[in-house]
Length: 186
Image 1 (tube, helix red, strand yellow):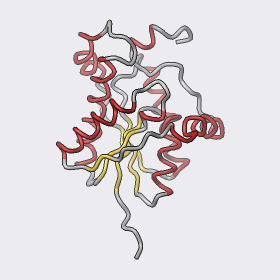
Image 2 (cartoon, rainbow, N blue to C red):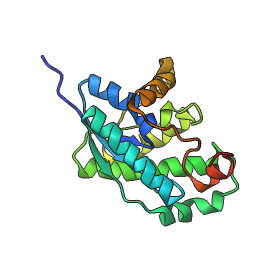
Image 3 (cartoon, one colour):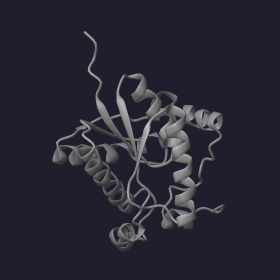
């Protein structure tokens, strides 16, 4: 008996981090809808650049791309009180929750059964925190959380190579104004 195709919404933080998760979820026989959330990305020019890169990745893999509303003021309103938090700390947890809530709403609207994220491919992100937040949000919205830590088994290196193959530029900061301050090249 053939496995029923599952409709999965893949929350995408950026194009390079989307390559491997999109490839692997598709190879598993899932119908993948990519949802790009960028309200945390600063400045707006950087957001527009990352959106164009996301369009390239979706086209390269033949995936549908849903662009979630760009609402940087909302993101700042939620995260401003944690401006001084260290990178990887409480501000990041709040940001992950904002991103995954927006993705879950989109998943429900689009008739997806499952939710997954590209965030866990980064060696700079805490996968345990991301999965805890993702499971809670998925449960509240009636979705199944696909708990994949994409950086395992060489996934991060594979994403670097795949990004190179596709001609993608790998950004040097997560996107938010606070992480950009710590980036010498931004």
